[in-house]
Image (cartoon, rainbow, N blue to C red; front, side, top):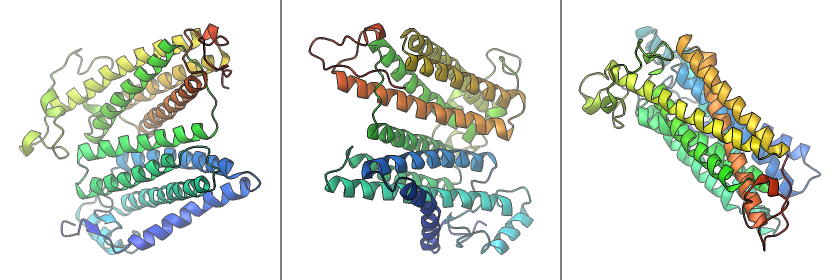
Length: 396
């Protein structure tokens, strides 16, 4: 396995063809379902479908990591230079025979390659979205700037590069964490585009709008911490709750735990293995971050509920629901020994939070642009500041 070239572009054309075939299904569905609609409606529908499939792709990427399948094929973009594990069955069999519980098995190879096929399919959809956006813009029918889709296309290419680095750098923790964050940022871009195509403004008081931004920033930091916990396999560094090893402040090594430039399992500087105290520090930092985020989400939910509108109250309940889901799945990971279902559920909750906050902030931004100002209180929703245009109603 060590002699396998890390990059072998031999099967790249056939993998690209597989990606096109995967993308054909959603593309045909959108074309048929919206055949009588205008180009803007079709673009919005394609954006929403791509958002949904990207969400699924992020979760499948999490499953790939949690099932230890990230190196199921130790080269990129194929599997031992083949387009699928079928063509690499002899190499996989040899690797699995040498290490039955190692990183390369037939099952892990299929999981890794399916993830790559799905990623290629999403890349094709985003490419079509970018091309179609420019075509519609040149016809003078664009509802939003085609640069939105172009930036999304550039970003998915960056994601592809990080996917390659994940394999060639042998699950380097910083690269894997950045790959996760990049996938979530792709969700942000697609969610913002979908909202731009059909604007449903949601007027928020200035303080509530600021609170939503704060929650978004804190959530980003917390998700990065969660990715760092997962990529360093620090989930079970603490198996009790709310204490850790029976103590409120156990022995921890934050310097080693948060040394960014190191290989998986290696100590800072590459000298020896990462000490257990470092894993404990990573885990406890994530718990402390969760506490801060939960407090911020509770404050945001109260402010949204107090704003009084039906739409704001629905958003408040959604924030509380996501917070409860994240607490339940996060706690289950600890006390139940990191079950796969709970871990996937926790990641799904984080992705849902990212999409939800993106939509909330996009609608608040559209309301602000429509009225020319943010109202001081939701009760004054029908009374914008002097000189502002007539405000739009609360969104559904």
